[in-house]
Image 1 (cartoon, rainbow, N blue to C red):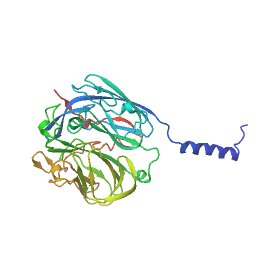
Image 2: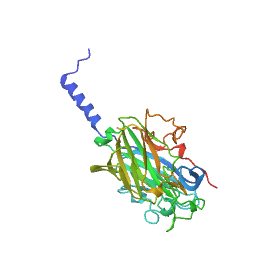
Image 3: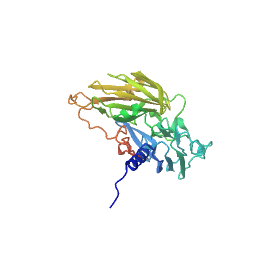
Image 4: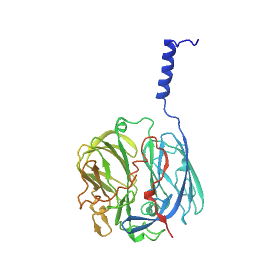
Length: 347
């Protein structure tokens, strides 16, 4: 006959379970493969651009990992120019040779060659990756950038509230160099196209929310311009800077973002309607010589009619995962591609 468990035994077993639940998750090793390819994308309508695209897409695939994970990325350069990848925001403690700076931490990856980066994902937060060869051309106007999100082991209180998570990468383009890879990025270049995740309005897509949502918008300034992002109808909370939680978050409706910076804002969806979110540097809301373009989109609340014939998105289906919102869902880790960002092979 099996003896019944004692009270002391039950308490001991419960203590073990609590300890297991409270213990931080063990670090995982995550190995990825990436290519750099000559790819042609459309910024808006028929405005094409020759890019050096990670896995053939601009922005590049989302790398979504957990704080403390051991990350290995094997990169093959399929273009005719040398490249590297800098993991912007990663501390690279003990792994300085994976920092991705040509002639400083590594020899640039020559055409046809492969290089493997190995590092620990520390710290957590909104990070990004980009080429560090001829950054004024390769990053500023060839689309060599992508997001890297490192989930924290211990989320902050506001992170636990978030119901929708979005990434918005801001960039600028000089169309005079659109079809001249290996050229451009010079003093005096005129940036005449500005994009949100590689697309300019009206080819961006709405951000859909419902009343009561707590929205996290992760802004990454990937281009060579200073942006002033304004949200209508709401006061947001600036909660994170360069991936790090601010000790004193502050409220605003306009946010200034310089090249390389990242800001995470928290928007509490408490005002149903359709609300613009756009760059308040007016010259960043153009497509070439045409106004009403560039870095603009809208926050749409569920339940607000969209059938007005004059509304830009009245008859357009939203682009799935345009802001990586599906890829950012809890527990979805890895190197996550998006067919919507894929270009076509460039000649």
